[in-house]
Length: 156
Image 1: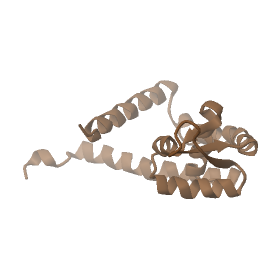
Image 2: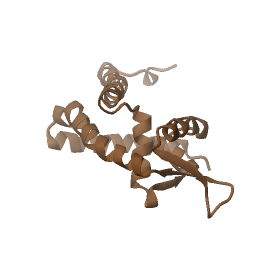
Image 3: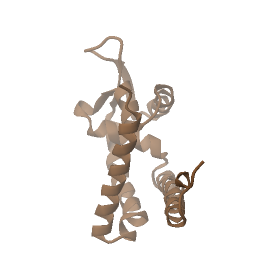
Image 4: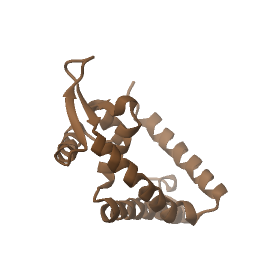
């Protein structure tokens, strides 16, 4: 292998910072959500996604895509959320082969109560660590990497 395969010292230092962020930020957000709302980050992602959907309803396959999860993992989490009275499942009226997840009134109330706590956690952990300009730039750079990954993983 040639030298071009290896990261130079500056790239290595930057990459280690990225890896550090990718491990510590989700863990800190999860910890805050568990402490403040008795939810996992995945629970909150599912509930928040449903809260933003038309009629607070999404097909399970669309919800899995939005939550970046397999259908089996999503099904397990939705079962847990159903037991808490926050989500119900029903067959899709437009596609009898599909199942919809629907946010209940109680689930809506949970999202409304949790969203400001989560927003404050995001602000405390990430937003306030940077200037407004730096945070916008950070978002732009993260989106650029995300799009690059999506372009590489699209199957023709």
